[in-house]
Length: 59
Image (cartoon, rainbow, N blue to C red; front, side, top):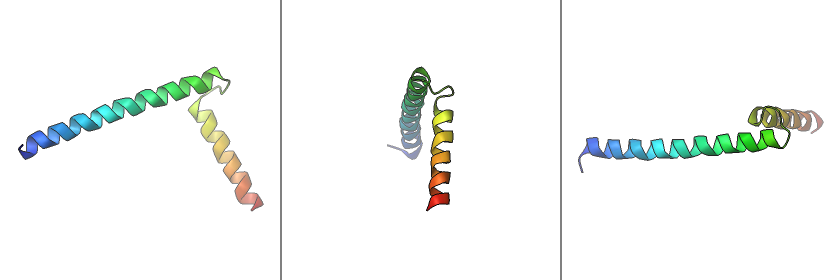
């Protein structure tokens, strides 16, 4: 297999992985919104950062 076809094969693999990850992210975001986190992942990230900040200030 020549180098160009290897590059195309790797690109296709990475695009597939990217599509899978985007689908997973969207699914998790939708689940979080459905259970009461108004902005889904953004809300969870803000909460996690707040918890970490509190732990840093206490410890």
